[in-house]
Image (tube, rainbow, N blue to C red):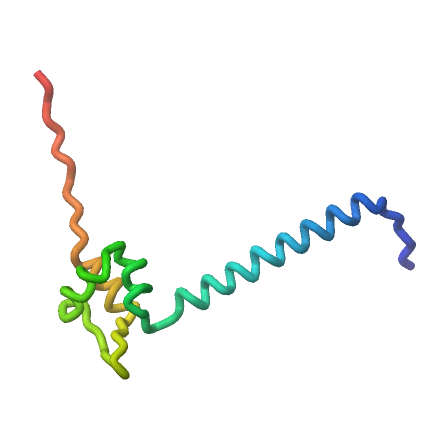
Length: 99
């Protein structure tokens, strides 16, 4: 058998605030995940991913891959990410001995 618990109003309000804050974080995360799963990107979205401006993006669109539908340029997210990854270079640091 369950009993009745008394909770101070201040404690209850703090708990409600925590739940509302958690709800906000969850909704924001869901929104970010949905955005990250969009297969096609606008020019502005592709600019955000690459960190380059519109001029660079338009000059390199043939290398990245794109479509033009109704006069609007769209990039496949996976193509933009693949282009950036294939052009990523990492070299081993050469340690010079200091005499």
